[in-house]
Amino acid sequence: MAEAEPNLEPAHQHASSSSGSEPRAIPRGRLALLFMVMLVTAAGNTAMQSVMPSIGTALEVNDVWISLAYSWSALLWVICAPIWARRSDKRGRKSMMALGLTGFVVSMTLCGVALWAGLAGAMTAFWTLLAFAAARSLFGGFGSAAPPAVQAYVASRTARSERTNALSLIASSFGVGTVIGPALAPLMVLPFMDIGLTGPFICFALLALVVLILLRLRLPDDEPQFAARGRTYDAPYATGSGSDHGDSDDDEDDRETAASTHAAAEPPRLKWFEPRLRPWVIAGLVGGHAQAMILGISGFLVLDRLGLRETPAEGAGPVGIVLMSGALATLLAQWGLIPRLNLGPRAATLSGIAIAALGVTVLGSAQDLHTIALAYSIASLGFGLFRPGTTAGTSLAVTRAEQGQASGIVASVAGASFIYAPALGVWLYNMSDWLGFGLVIALCVAVLLIGTKTLQADADLTIDKK
Image 1 (cartoon, rainbow, N blue to C red):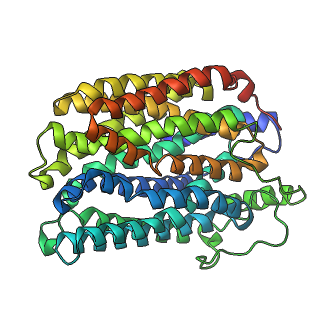
Image 2: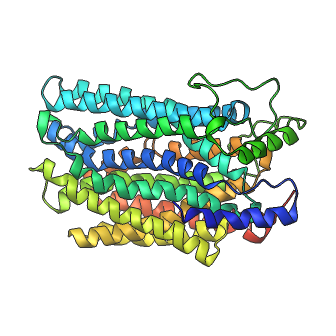
Image 3: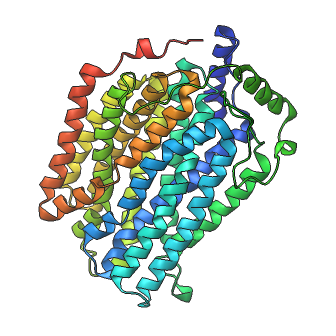
């Protein structure tokens, strides 16, 4: 986490010279907390994904139903993420982060209890999956409050020319989580008290609770970064001011930034397909569906190609290795390639989707763990370039006062990709390997062709503006 600070410093230095309205770089302590908020959420979700294929096999349910169990949560994410993003503009980022973490803790706990009951024979597979879907919906409904708030917090404090790097840093916190989650998941398959495959749910709920407590204690209560009519009130989960725990100079920065924006009018509500955003939303939506399908297929692919259907408990390890390899490739893209090559949104999006298509092509024919992990890593490297590219492109297409809404749209688009795409990919994969992989490749090619014609040039997007 200490490496993240230098990536944001140039934004502060450049902004200071170009416009007095540009905010200072995010302090190290706050950045660490923001990093942890995103990391624990990602780690818990990928740990869950690494054990769910094995849980579904143990429950003797069709693979498609396991994928569909996420659909309601994804739909709620699409609906709720923009709402929480707009609320964060008015009520402050910290309260929305706390709400999101609370939703994650409660959701993971209830998911673990439901699956434990099903594996123990206390509920049928049907009622187990129904209870799991209901508990997971809490993450879609309330967990969606945190990522837009974190993204808006960072976007409002970085210069336009550095925003791709800054947002790739936040995306990389998800990347670190996706490494940690699959790595720890097999270790959390606890042999005592019949916890077994549900161990990762309980363990990550406890870890997220610790992060939530640290967030409430260590991150100062923030005023909204942009104008809101009327005074700012604490969100329902607020427990009082945290300013005593922060640096006084940093608190003054917050008050000065808020004071300078209270006179501005509240920006109009952004739509998904508003002309400035349309190319980036289309690219994010189509490419996101491709990414969601591969993520849905990968766990079941490992079980099938390695012959682990008869021993599902042994599948968590190999699935975790594949997911962890992909996560490391994503980190290489977000921490290495984007800043080193100084890739702009358009370059990152188009090059990333092309590399992803290559990885998916290799993955379709992979038969052993090494080849599967390598192919999945190539695809993940591509998506690791693609996702920050579309995120930064969406952010740069709008004004600073619209960052909260833009981050909500980004989160909503990401959630939309998981409503039905994983289940569709698994269904096609079960019918024929190449039906599933062929559709993913076709989606990647579509993004490449459409994006080449419609995405705005990086030179135009990254010019610092007041």
